[in-house]
Image (cartoon, rainbow, N blue to C red; front, side, top):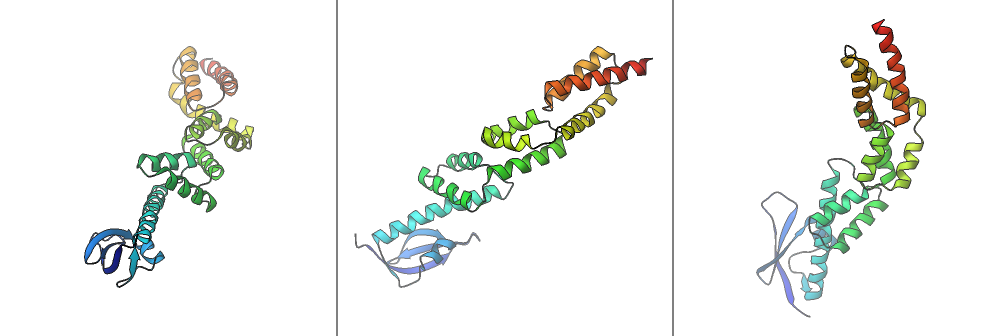
Length: 217
């Protein structure tokens, strides 16, 4: 396995990306990311055999997976499941995908509990979603039921009711001129779609029914 020989040229690619073309014995053989170039201290005049080249190429593939994962994370935080699906969809070798995900969990780039806490806070604040909707969203993103339940169990019931009431008030103002059966149907459906539990929805509907009757009187 003695080949391939001597590195005779290292050329930075013109694309602007931190990648380098490696020439052995005067011929182009492969390209590597700058991280791999530095890790193996590749330099002109260096002797490499076939086993070393194979090792370098494996590390280059591993680095591609890592770079792809970091780009995916740059848009927003991800769950472990989302990351695995993304990398697998790129066609990367399962071994490298699993290694990269494990590494990112250890480095806390991936943390399903932290993701769930941030997701709940953001979706409640911006969308006004109730716990039922939040549970569906998080489980769809692959967060375990155990983590989802623990995160949602910490939510204050009074805050949930206040949020549901706020969302109901907004919708009721658009329906106040309608008959109560129509208001009840549309308001109830709206709150259920936002993910509030049925017991809370029915409680609020009774409250708005009294308000509606007072308005008619």
